[in-house]
Amino acid sequence: MKIEYQRDAIPSKRELVELYDSVGWTSYTRDPALLAGAIQASLTVVTARAEGELIGLARAVGDGLTIVYLQDILVSPSYHRHGIGRELFERVFAPYGSVRQKVLLTDDEPAQHLFYRAMGFTETWDMSPAVHAFAKF
Image (cartoon, rainbow, N blue to C red; front, side):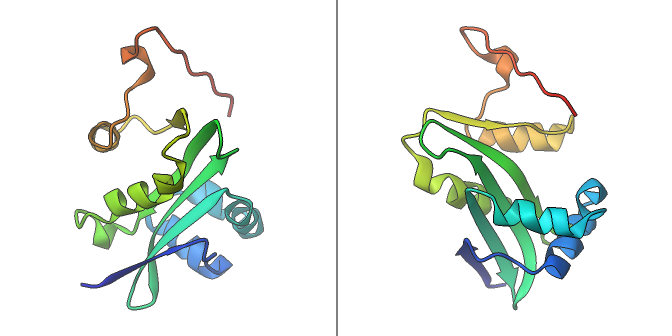
């Protein structure tokens, strides 16, 4: 299976909706125009394609100098466990090696926690000195 990765090649609205729906992120797909606008406004977008089909995406937001947030990383379920998520993760953060703060929020799913720990991230309550994260949805 040959996977092609591209930086800042923005997928079509239809492709975005199909990918986000495939992983159950329907809160994003309720407003396809908003989703497409959010992707377009991202600091960096990395896509993964198999035979031209969009199968994965990672996007970062932030200033790119002092802080970068991994906003979304998703891979179509039929392509899980092939290293695509790891490759997307590495590529989306590659330009920001010198950025001090790299941050993400995630659901309470053990597989996601294991993935982010394997990628070198630490949960805030495990940090010393203590760090707290706050969010409002």
